[in-house]
Length: 405
Image (cartoon, rainbow, N blue to C red; front, side):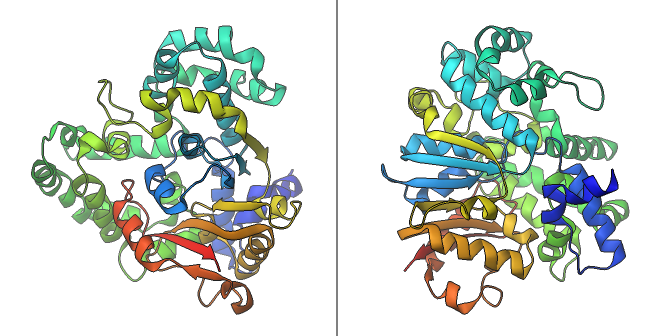
């Protein structure tokens, strides 16, 4: 059993063999936590992604799948093909469920209720009637199987799937902690202006980060597992500051820099789901105006349970031109980073673009990626800074775009 755990692909990707014993124990704990559902909603802004990537009708993309929101949202830009890869079997199952639902649910209202509201027993009936028979056997077995608490996983769509998973549980604990300090995080969603949002944040939320218990808790690497932040990424995120200060600053961006009327990430963080009104903000793939294009193009997405570098190594040269790495490089050793970029460079078409995010502000490639590889790529410094400022999820230090020279 121990050998099986050590050989798991997530464990191989996360655990730092050169780290000390304590850090390796933390790495193993994170790898174990990361095997289940982590993100019911991905936390990278797809509008920013599409601005940076400049997706074209002939674009052939590869992206880390995560919760699938961005992969389906990229379909609105009309690429030729997208390969979504992930090591997490729960994320693979979620991507396949979303794609099958886009193809086979009767209409937009069913699709919206299933993934935007996600709390109706009618969703389970719709799954059985329209979707289940179109899933491959492992995906259907996953959704109709039971989680550690004995609940059928598909029933999450009748009880708010966004309260489940590692991130959903983390946000739930944050709300519980806030209530202990007599703070209602959802109050900010009633604000009508940015100034009102800022006033609520300064009055209600900012002082919590001065509490002794909160400062101690946020300095423990395991406390941020729910954000999908492994121990290797913790130090990069903290820098030389207490983690409470970093989180206060990132939360201030989320709460104050964008109108809540246009920021579904704020609704997820402060309301634990999407808004119910027809005008409530939603990811592109869930917006009514994009329903037909997502439905018509769902067959352009291939979902693969694979390591990104290993999958790229099986592809022909010059076969892709858009790469979305999320924040996966923050987990990587220098050897892993160089192996990945060697395959990206080999498979990249002329003018290919690579987009990724980092916990810290600067790009992590200079000084770590071999000059022979890095010199092939041009960093879009101005556009990267612009996209970082416009990313409504607000949790990353930097959004970075490279283009093949």
